[in-house]
Structures are given as structure tokens and as C-alpha cells.
Image 1 (cartoon, rainbow, N blue to C red):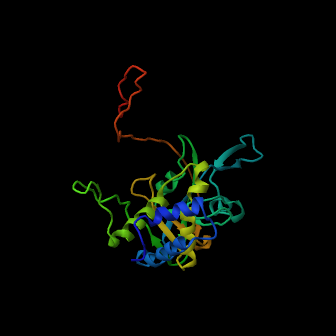
Image 2 (spheres, helix red, strand yellow):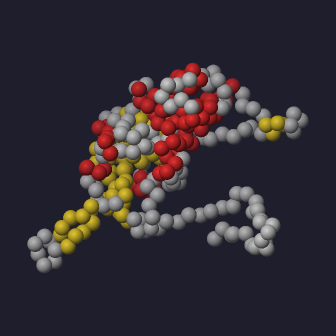
Image 3 (tube, rainbow, N blue to C red):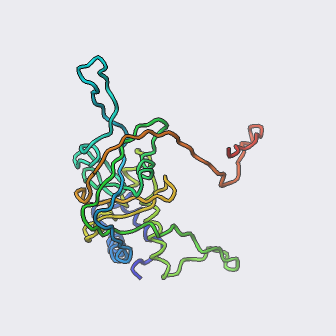
Amino acid sequence: MPFKTAEAFRHFVTSVKHDRRYIYSTEVTSFLDAVEETAQSRIKTIPKDIHLWRAQLGATVRIQDEGQPEEMEVDVPWMDARMKPIPALVGDGRANPRGVAYLYLADTAKTAASELRPWLGALISISQFHVNRELRIVDCTSDKKLWMKGFDPIEGHLIPWAPEDYEAVVWGEIGEAMSRPYSPEESSLNYVPTQIIAERLRHGGVDGMAYNSLLSKGGHNFVLFDIRDADPVNYTLHEAERVDYTIAQCDNTYFNRRKPPVDPIENP
């Protein structure tokens, strides 16, 4: 089996985040070899000439009726200089390290906007991008996060994964890590593992990756390793009209014994 254990991804994460960032251990090198090998069965094709979407928070302004009594500033969407990343200005992303520009796109305008986590009333510049050539990408959208098979009541412990399950377990965790959003103060460290995996796949000859959106139900995101592989064809300004979260209780309510009990929060 390419992966030596179902814990391979977690061991990799611990190593590159807290031990060796740039000179890998033998275990990490073996893990990345296995990632590149098993990625081959997950390569899908994005055809030339399809359209994907990219969003950026904010807008710029232009002068309307310049020189006239009615002259005024109006909001307009960001154009080329902002809608395609500039290497010297990019920060850490889930697939790219700081200073290395990758192109993040989505399958719909809504998914692209949702990834920005806009607030109510936020202005969002959205562009439709034309894909310039046929692309080979590693598809992480079908691998689901898996949990232990169950509990053995006779032996009194969790039932471990069998070796034939290791690949599905590891790729489920890679897909979940690619999709998980982080706050800006957490992202630099937490994106290190997925940045390393993306770079290994890039140098293995693939053009990008696809992963699920956890901010837009049913949405899919794409990261292209070469920003020349797609270009904007239009620019439109949008406003976030509604931000609505639904919560569901997933555990018991715990009470502070030193305080009088109150009714737990109900899901509206």
C-alpha cells in the first residue's frame, strides 16, 4: 500500500508544522511520494474555453460626468490589476506560500463570493474567467472525511482501519484540509501542509487542484498553479444583501454549578 498507516496525513501535518518545515524526514518524503502516486487516479480534465469565477472584496471608483455640475464618484469593480494576483503582493493561501501566485477560481459566482466571507453590505468585485487551455487537475471533491469504523464491544477498543482503507482515509483528510477555512491569524501555519502537497503535485506535472467549498453548499473551488491559464473576460460589482447562518446544537448543554440554571440557547 502506498500509505503506511491511516494516520499518515496527521503525522505529516505535525512534522511540517512543528518539526521540519523545509528539510523533510524520511517519513514525510515517503508520504509525499505516496500522495503523488495516488493522485494519478484522481486527475480530471478541465476543458479549454470553459468559464470559472473569481471574486475580490471591495471596489474602486471612477468619476462620472467629470467637469460637469453633476460630477460624482461612483463605485466600479476591480479590473485586471486586482483580479489577477501579483506575486510580490500575495500572502499565504491554502495552496500557495507567500510570494508565489496561484489563481483561485470557483464554479459559480456565489461560491467565489462566499469564500470571501463577506459581511452584510460588503461590495464584491466578481469576474468571469476564460480557461485558456485544457488543464489536468487533481480532484479532491469526491474523497470524504472518514471516521473510525466503530467500536468493538468485545475487545473494548475502536476498530482500526485495514491497509486497503488507508488511501481513502488519507485523501479524505487532504480534501477536508483543502476545504477548511481559517481566520487570517491562523492561516499562515495551518496552510503549510496543503501548500507542500500542492507544490509536490505542481512539480509532478499537474496544473491545479479542485476542492469542495465549506462556505457555499454544493460549490467547488479550483486552484490553478499557473496564473496564465485563465484570464478575466468581464467585471461586475455586487453587494452582499444577506448573510444568514443556521446553527444546530451538536452536543449536550453544560451548566456552571455556581450559577442558577437557565434555558439553553434554542436554534431560531
